[in-house]
Length: 295
Ligand SMILES: Nc1ncnc2c1ncn2[C@@H]1O[C@H](COP(=O)(O)OP(=O)(O)OP(=O)(O)O)[C@@H](O)[C@H]1O
Ligand SMILES: [Mg+2]
Image (tube, rainbow, N blue to C red; front, side, top):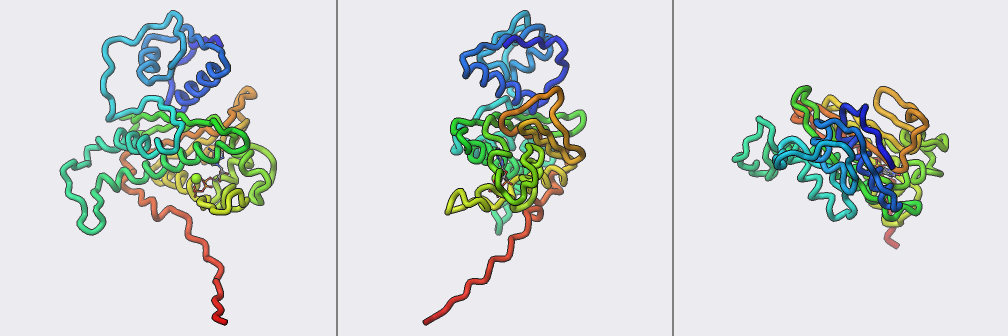
């Protein structure tokens, strides 16, 4: 794969995670990737973000000097393969994006009753959202024969507009494959599947009876979207040939297609203290009364 990057001027974590996942796919099929004409500024930045693992850069400036620790503002593109890595990655990313906020008091004593500090409460919504997205990517995405699917994660804080941007991209089966046959899916299209997945209490695992010991309630994606919105941002969700955000749905441009699910989350960092994510969880559905009969 020969990539002409001469017109590339900006890459956000979503784009970087997509690029890294694409390069991985080419290499997996014993292909090679060569990137040409990348400008010096982007070349240094994208190398710093670990986008170019195993990729040959032709005529691009090498990364200069030593790598600065930017753990307070970004997380390099990271690939996860195992569910056991999720907690650690979500924690690392959250600390990078939220842990350095000026309002944080690092010596704060935890509340006696709850054991939580104010910083825990700030970190909580983002950590919840990441856990949910990563968990989905390493469970649902592996259905329908995609057992080796994995997920790429990257993020950055942009001080100029106060935005946190996170990209979570998997190379699994996509929404449509998991929700086929679900009553909430009104059309067999990728867009309809994205919209169905966003509805509260829609889950392939809960309603389609794929597992008898169902652990999924179908609230992760709904709540993650609400968290982003409450924090002044949104989710962009792409799968198959479709992309959806709160303001619009469309087909991907130029006939593009993503095999898997690719999600961009953006929100205002300063608004995170206003988010109480437990208030955003869909209400628990009433359980059918169980009749006990003593006979
Ligand atoms: N990365 C993914 N790849 C494929 N399908 C997905 C992916 N993420 C979500 N889905 C589909 O969307 C549905 C809704 O996702 P959501 O996270 O809201 O609920 P859940 O994971 O089933 O339950 P919960 O999050 O409450 O444990 C999933 O059940 C699955 O069918
Ligand atoms: Mg989920």
